[in-house]
Image (cartoon, rainbow, N blue to C red; front, side, top):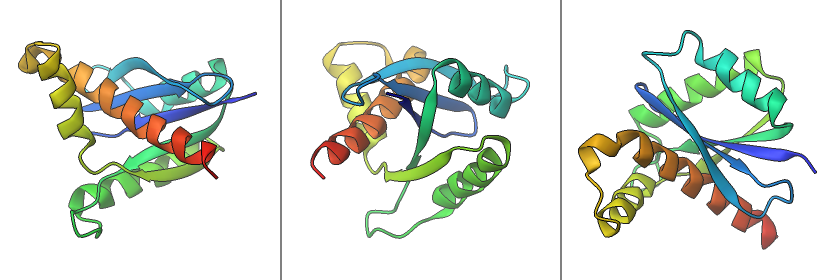
Length: 139
């Protein structure tokens, strides 16, 4: 079975997660630092090819009332560019409060958050993808 790639898009960092082949568990991948990577789309394309990804799930930030704000519009722009480069289905997943939950997880582990921003993005990507996978399992 092919895998699903989860993405937590940010202008500075892009958190990534990949499903196991059965689509049950989300596992973290290294965060892409947009300042250090020449072409994030090529990096993602490489991951898609190497990991046999069939679908991409992109976290879509929404306001608490469910509307899509400025950050959500930036994610949609990123998705459009990604779709031009990679011919895979892209689904959106409501990512409200995933960063808050990620920070809570780090605090519980007593990790220094300022030095762990990449980890926050990884955890957020895992939470986005795991929520999506759990939803698929209950359909």
